[in-house]
Length: 331
Ligand code: AKB
Image (cartoon, rainbow, N blue to C red; front, side):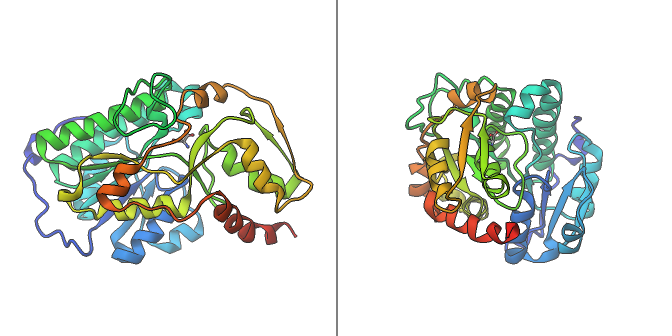
């Protein structure tokens, strides 16, 4: 990434606070399509541009603007920001925990170099920047139950290290340059219609379709592995809400948010209510070690107190919504 000093001081005059123009990077991952839908409802279809390096489906193409954007190409991103008059970046491009461990050099490029590019562009063009963080930003030395916003963060995955780096860099840019950097630390996010892809919490996404398709599920974690989780609708709502929080209400730039905590065993019990003959087996692999270093219960009381964060779905409500939605697909 390169600094282009001629743009330092460029400002975002003319930003319409009611209709900001938003660029979502890595938008074909688990969260991008849903967030684009939510933000387009609020700010207008053409004000939210989805981007990624993969070919979009017909539905994505028809839903609103979509552009090719490689997070590693500074100039191309710069051109996109100028041409499309971008006010906010939602930076979703990242390799998740398990897949990152399998390709550390790529994770460093995407998660660290990519972040440097958007940080610098956000500074130069005075954009509001959201970068998700994660329970993976904590490690074996952090308190695990509960894990507060402020505590030791010494993660042991490249994903976690890159997210701590993002938190620190974003906060540094906020203090040094006044960049409007915002970050939420998400737990495992559970969705039924989008794939997670490469995470440690993904068993809780895969289990629903597997249960209906085969009646069984082979879990890569031990039955008692407790991790914080959240239904995707709550997650997307937290981002949309957080982007609008006035500066004066934000005591932190990076907040924990969560909804529930459960183990594979507890989730399997819930699944059995909808798939009575369901059976689960446990074959822990390398992801167990990652999960064992992560929070079991997340403390998000600061988000609740400072800007009114409130989840809607607990384990029971989430399972009902998911099974109601996907069971007809298997009849
Ligand atoms: C992962 O498991 O890597 C992600 C996360 C918790 O950030 N879902």
